[in-house]
Image 1 (cartoon, one colour):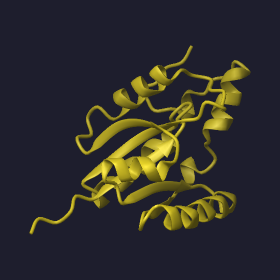
Image 2 (tube, rainbow, N blue to C red):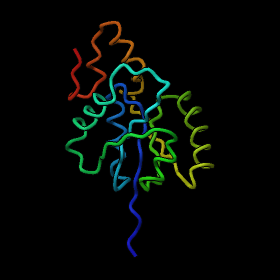
Image 3 (cartoon, rainbow, N blue to C red):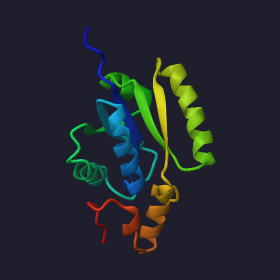
Length: 156
């Protein structure tokens, strides 16, 4: 009997994707057969960058990673995972606040997600201060956010 493929989803808004996101994905690759970096679409949320722009960036950043796929979904992450056969969620943790929030979401996902496991990777120290929120604030203030972005992303 062939073992079931280990598929993991790394969900987020990626508005924009940061160097920290990329590091978490690359560090997860030895653990899974496929990692789906998926943009969750929330119609109530106001994004700085369009869905198309964010999808293009993800495609560009991970174009040389054969185990990485790019996706998008609306609604519950657990439903998307079930649709694509993913049994794992990937989350990066920068600090204790991230842990408290993500732990609660993980526990709820286990209840409604039918054995969906969340895998946490602790941010490396050089990325622990980076968040999309902070990067967006730098950009809105016309600052230089390039130190926090993957090399493939250039924003004027």
